[in-house]
Length: 245
Ligand SMILES: *[C@@H]1O[C@H](CO)[C@@H](O)[C@H](O)[C@H]1NC(C)=O
Image (cartoon, rainbow, N blue to C red; front, side, top):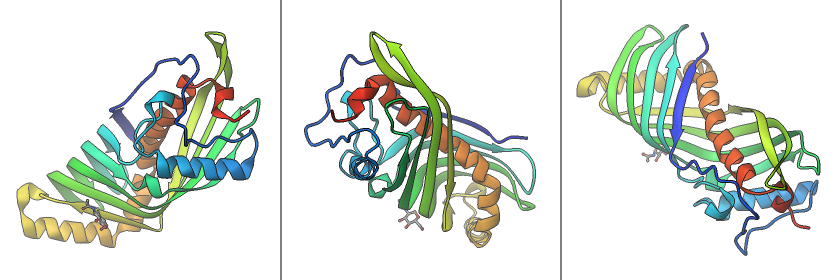
C-alpha cells in the first residue's frame, strides 16, 4: 500500500497576475545563467523567507502547515500520524546546489538544495506500531533533519493565459536524504513519562530504519508542499517576467 498523504497549506493564493511587481532588492537572472540562478534562488530563501505576496511566494521559513497526515499501512511501521499546525523551519539557510531547465522553452526543471537543519515542530497525534512496539500519543512534536538534501523535479509547459505565457506544472516530485533524523514526541502514552522517554530513545536509536520506512510518506508530503509553493509563483507571474531582460 502506498502511504497516504493529505495536507493543507495556509496560504494558497491562486490568482492569475497581470504583470507582477518584484521587490526592489529581488535579484533576477537571464535565462540559462546557471551561476546567477543558484545565487538568486539562494538569496530568495535567505532574504525573502517571509514571503513575497506580490509574486505569489508564500512564507518559506517558517513554512506553516495546518494539517498533514502520514498514513503508513504495512511493513515494520504501521502508523497513522497526524500533524496539526506545524512549522517547518530552516529553509532560510538553504543553499541551492542545482537549478536546471530554466530555459526559454521550459519542460523539465530541477532544483537541488541543502538545508543544514530542517525542523518540523508542532502538534501531533500518533497511533499504531513501530517495529513491533505499540505507539500512541498526542502532544507536541519535533522532527529534525540534519543536512537535508532535497531535490525538486517537475515537468510542465508554457500555456497562454490572459494573453501571457505562464508555466503550468504537470508532474512534480520531491526526493530527499538526510545525514541524521531526530524525533521527539512529548506526552506519549497519555503522559506516562517513563514509557514516553523509552519510546523516544527507541525511535532515535532506530532512526535509519524509521526514516527508510517513512521516507516515501515524508517525500509525498514535501511534494505537496513544494508543488504548491512553486506552482503559486508560476501561476502568479508570467514566465518571462521571472527573469531579467
Ligand atoms: C528540535 O530538535 C532539534 C534536534 O534535537 C533541536 O536542535 C531543536 O532545538 C528542537 N527545536 C525545538 C523548537 O524544540
